[in-house]
Length: 319
Ligand code: NAP
Image (cartoon, rainbow, N blue to C red; front, side):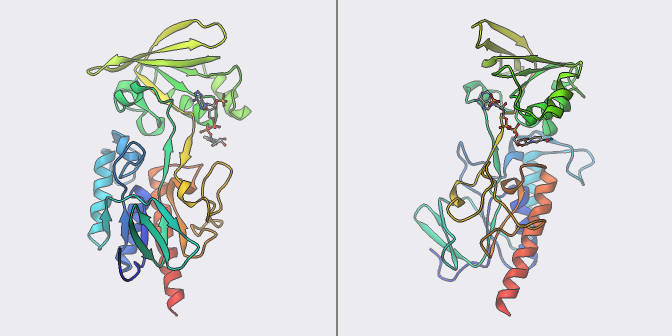
């Protein structure tokens, strides 16, 4: 428990949280960043920690590994006084002021709050998804699609929404063939995206089908999937080197639902072109408020915006 309130607490240490920390540090706010305790649900450093090579973050002409990028962003923020702690916010009270953040039994007060808790890709829950993570299993074709293991090889995409179409279309640039495995006989995706996927000669669809298992070994990683047709019960193997799960993302907003306006998918709603939320002094940046771009660089950009807005808001309260 702390005695005087923090000026700003930042929840999350992905690209958005680290960039917010950098800017808040340089504004002399000595930000306290909750990185989260590593667990099945919490990934200190965010989704980039599961990505091998990041080739689309400006400033790294030769690419950079996801963990290295996060280490660099954190180090840069620490240089200006950001304090990172391996704590997870377990409860918040945004109806009182200063705001209160709990981490289990510990209680922290803060004059402003930046939420950068990100979103988590949904997976089917197969044990093999964990076993082959970074060895052919991915939930981000934009991040991983160009890796050598997928080039000129067959890959599969699970899902029937816009994300699945987008992932499949992106993967056609590299893969020899892309199989979309969808559990129904109709896509949920918008017509334009579905038509684009269906008319691409490199894409085929396994309708009414579910993935029962991912095949492979520890050395080669993914070598295929076992699918079952839910109408006929028939099973078959599809050889592939990649398994891309595209069944949606879940923004990490459960903690805030009693206080903040969320859209129907659970993303925090911010003011137009701003990071301010419906609670004054609370800002949201990165994937937790972005169902559309979901890129490391856009998350970092919105982290910068949140820090500038928080800094100006704190200044306006003091004058
Ligand atoms: P989504 O629209 O919720 O689609 C998820 C897909 O995954 C559905 O086809 C669903 O099947 C399938 N699915 C879910 N759980 C599954 C499970 N356990 N096993 C097998 N399949 C499962 O999610 P999304 O595609 O990520 O899109 C989210 C939002 O972002 C949408 O509003 C979308 O329009 C938008 N978005 C837009 C673009 C774009 O316009 N460029 C790109 C990406 C996303 P069912 O259909 O059977 O439910």
